[in-house]
Every structure is written in C-alpha cells, then in structure tokens.
Length: 113
Image 1: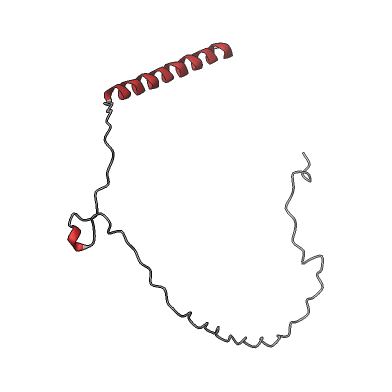
Image 2: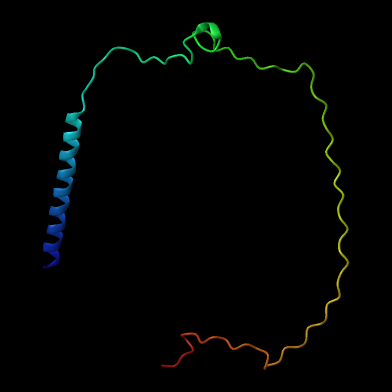
C-alpha cells in the first residue's frame, strides 16, 4: 500500500468516525424534551416554620459584635539564642598520591574502534 492510499484510508476512516459521532449527538438531542416555560425559579427557605426564627422571609439578619475597646497588644516572647558549640580540631589532610586516585570511566570519545 503506497503512502497516498494509506492517507486516503485514514481520511475515510476519520470522516466515518466523525459522521457516527454527529449522528449519535443528533439522536441524543432529539430524545431531550424542549420545555418553554415562563415561570421563575424559586429557592425554598431553610425552614418552613417562620416562628422558629430559622427560616421565612426577612430572617436573614446577621449581626457581628464589635468590641468597644481595642485589645492591648501582647509582647512577643523573648527568644534566647543557644551558645554556639565549641570548634573541634580537624586533622590535616594528607597529600594525594597517584596511587590514591580513582580511574575515570571510559567515555565514548576515548574508546578506540
């Protein structure tokens, strides 16, 4: 199969898939009833008993108590720093010799064919 025939087959399969998807969308849309109403949507109150104060019209008043005097600012706690640890003596490092070095791994540039 040549490249041109391959792309023709892919295009035909894609068009068939899109057609199937569109026809199923049309079938779902036809199954849904269309409702044309002029009524408004209303949200029911939390409680149907207006005497309990929890529901009904006009019971949505909220109050926030405000103090008449401002509170005194609190002082932050005093943080004491711990003393630094005493320095520890360190032995001097010995000079590296050629025998102590580690061999580096071979890189592709250093390998001879």
